[in-house]
Length: 517
Image (cartoon, rainbow, N blue to C red; front, side):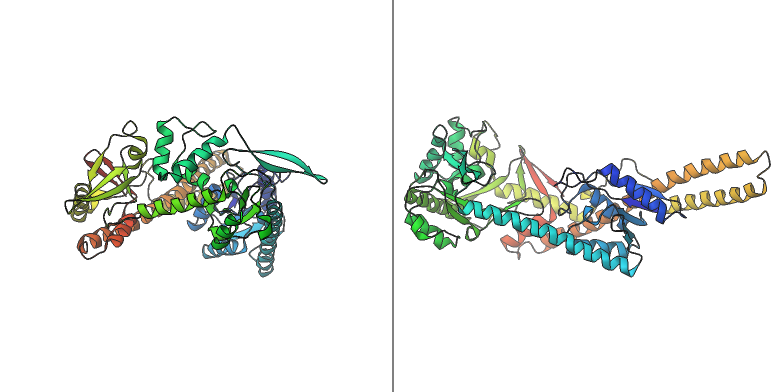
């Protein structure tokens, strides 16, 4: 019997059981409930520090892969919430266990899934684990929202040009934002440039050309500039601001608090997802009155927002061209975009390096390359692949290639048969001088058997990966054929979407185009 042990130390508490303690407790428990079986353990212990609500854990993914490939007979954890804290995800995980005849055992709760009662208790405990986590999250969120609504700074990265101070309020100390007179000049400069009509990409280049850097000592990028310009923290709390945010659907304090004396604070601008933070729609923002001085009059701050909207409209594609947009990269690694203009009634379109455009030719000297030239080279390569599918084969890592799983199984069968025969011979010759040689041979075969079992697991995983690779190759090839056969009838957006599905990226290196599938 092969038992996979999955330990994980809580990311929230320092006093939770260590990974090594969890492993040992699982081994001891397995020795009790499976005392009549020969047990092999496989430990998945690389997820220390990962949250239980995050299913994208390295060792957990390895565990599930082994379950699906028939490597494990039992999955064992010290406590149910070590492996999952979400009922829906746990249910999906347990369905996979059932499909592959893998039992699940939890030491702390003292149950296993081989019994109906064990399965019922398991689902109940998973539900309570999720409920506890959601209640904790709600309490934290409610507390943070209450602090934010009263103008307090709830933590996180400080806005540019701001610092924070601690002040006594009643029996507690709270943090508040304060304008930093030594660094706020940068923020004011960015607003001034926007109001002069500079697009964000041009502001980025302006800062780089003039050696203007952030407080961390790095050059500002377009994302950082955009976040500064759209941050309500710099806006005056005047009645104009109230109506602006009201039109956006934001949650606001009473209108009478907008007296034009202080700045604002925006909360709920991002939301933590399973793997990363996601920006929220402005209608989900909560706007509070801060105690810090405002940086920009409300009229100017709102004008800057409207200016960004105009810039965005000007950047919207006017022409359906550049079917490689989104997947083409420059030799320097930067994204390539499309520029189109008309001259004497003739339309000209080019791919260009965005780093070169923003930072100059000292950063990249690729220049502008005609779209027709690049796309003809791209389609030419696809045509070659169509008539020679081997030209784009996705090759798995061939290092450490193993013999087939079927041949390993045959060797295992022979090794076990030899062990059985020698064991029978030993019973009849226990008092014979040959007994020690028989025992030695059994031990040698047993070691060989362990090696074969390890190789079988690796070979099974490798064959599974190869099969998946072949399916991907067939899908890519069929899509290439469809694109070429229907190229003239597919609209621009359809071509672009299909190409994004076919390839990961293509790299333009001078006149050479390299496609990566």
